[in-house]
Length: 117
Length: 115
Image 1: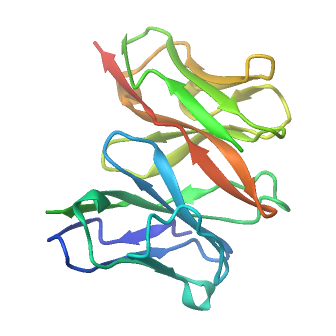
Image 2 (image 1 turned 90 degrees about the horizontal axis):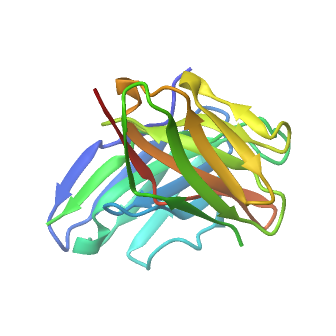
């Protein structure tokens, strides 16, 4: 079974440009999460999809960030325009429903390292 | 609201020595707790989890953690460190929002293992 896949693994862009990160969750996982880790700090929650619906986007930093999950499969996270403080590692995770499957877990992708220069 | 504090951003041990990584949590409801590990250039991998069953939880690679409600702690231990244990370790608590769940992470502890 394929794991959570993220593209690209690394991205270096200039301030003001646009970048789109992609996440392919494990097939059948309704929950999809985006997290971000800025250098040396904690892994911070950005948002949570249940199928194609945004369940919780309380962690999105500002309106320069736009996440979508059309059709409830893969998700994209677009940053437009990118700023220097957006640099960090963006993780995606997927899971089954914790409410009905207590032994499930969140599976993480390898992350996308974004550098804004 | 839930939160996690990991004491010590860097821990260094000798090969064969005890590994102890500290994690304290805050939760207004009975928590689900997790330890994840990130090896260099890899994603986060689940080491172990506590979901209100046994308080002593055994995970992969010889790691275990004990849930202590009175101390609000979930420290990670391994009796004998191996060079391959060098990685960054994250403690997380399950947060609840609108009936759904999300993981809330600590800042991470980087473990170095010396020969």
